Length: 112
Image (cartoon, rainbow, N blue to C red; front, side, top):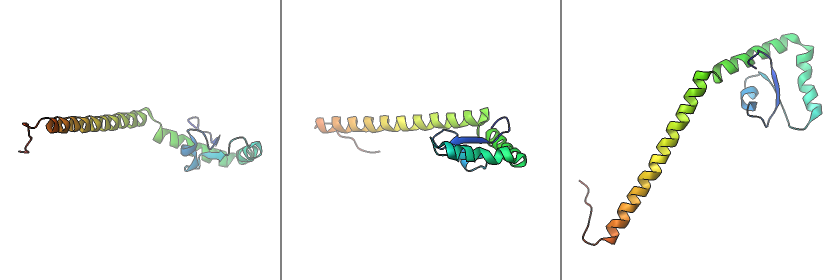
């Protein structure tokens, strides 16, 4: 795709969602050689179509797979993981405080 060529791939690969909606190639079911051959046929017989789909494939890579875009997505995933982790810690801390409060009859917490 980065080379400006359409991609023929199975629906079970990680790039399937990039190819599927972008008209940048063809998706075929796994282990179906007949369908695989038919998916290649338009690109082998029509160079204009292969070129157009190849340009769309290159655009998909430039848009969705640039180093900056990948880094931003990874950073967002890490931030989300930290937020979720902190939420579990807060829940545990509040649970422990509540357990201690019930265990001690002389201690009580009043909200400010």
